[in-house]
Length: 252
Length: 368
Image (cartoon, each protein chain N blue to C red):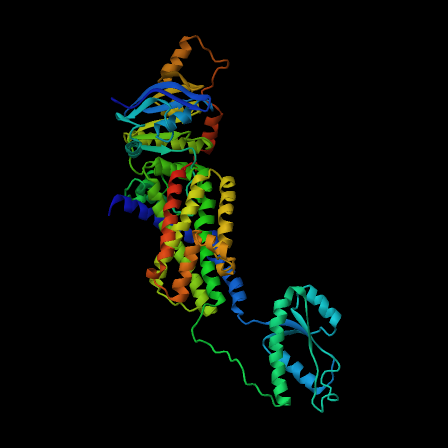
């Protein structure tokens, strides 16, 4: 973890009169997993979309490996992979074909079976996307986003709507991607997810970053301010019970 | 292979495979036009002029009997059975169920007045609406009577007319219907298809995923045109098979030239679908716009009715619609045996439209 690969400076975005991103700045180091947390409507998705070249930047500057996103979006597109909130793909197309097509968009020829093995879906190679479960779709969608071996990988609320086991399985997959040296930037509103996956997190509220640090530091700072939980936290919670009782079966 | 070509070919290949797995799409692009082909082909197949008439014979004479038989066996007349009185016949005429009524009065065939030779006057009743039909019918009937007269009295006919065929195969009604229906198939595939699935793909975020990649709009357009052309040629090939095997259609021109021409047609019309579907954010925007464009074009370009049946001023205007040169060109190659070299005006019109349509389509396209 050395050089900052993604640099965001004073980013602004308005829809009509409403300013949804109000001058945010942060840097993400190479190989780091960076989380953007916040309630719905905090501006997380809009921020990601500006970095991903999908939305024009009103004001401010984003660079990835010192290439300005606004000036050269076409080059940026080869460097980034994006897991969108929607996991929809064309129906009646086999998984292998979808991956071939996705790679062809980058001008690349790939071996789809290898990629499917990486996400434990090789036995579904000839299935259509509409026959996969929610968790399988998410995993497939990650494989599709990584066909061109991007340097930076964006995930927008990757585990929303998944059951706890599918979520854990996805966490393991994201961790695997990170270990391959890919820089990961994700948004979430599950705090546990941020704690498990992220080296650093930025908390957004109403278009601004209100805190940014490692999860441990943020917790320590809060405790130093004299915060006490109203109820003593047990060493296990209901989710742990659920995972323990159903965990032998791998989630979808 | 250049990278862009690889990209385009992979997208086209998968698009084509997907089409052949989609039963609904096959129904709308293959079966649907075939249904119209059977309906309109069946209608157009009956090329003979005929009149449906009521025949009321009130005379008992032998000559009346003979004439009645002759009229019944004449192909020009379709005699409705069961109409045996004038009141009922008038009622049917007023409902346009029959064109006219031939009445043979009781005195018909009397030999008393004319020195042993039977005489009489048949009456043709007709409605205001079918005056023309009654005129034609009366002269045909006169022909039948002339034949009968010639047997009764020796006639001299110094002046006469005979009809002779020129032996050239003119265009039959089916030829017009067929090329029009190919135009209909091209519209269905090129406009109704993308107008439905583009907004759907936007809604689901499928186009957005492509937007994230370096894929360029023109690459996407080219691959879509390719897969659409393959599907279109498949659908039209089936229509040709049916037309040849069932409707005795005879291909006059070169299949190769027809394929080239049809691809140009599909390219142009599909551009309209790309422009509407690519622009619209959702189905509610796409459907009305598509209908406004498609329906006038469908009826004015000779899809279901040949354009020559229109008033001249309307023919001049509709000549310039994008679908008109396509339908005209297909008919000229397929039924008149013309070559692409003969289709200069049609190719020019198609080319101009293609440039206009794709300029708009590129400008208004949205990935999400």
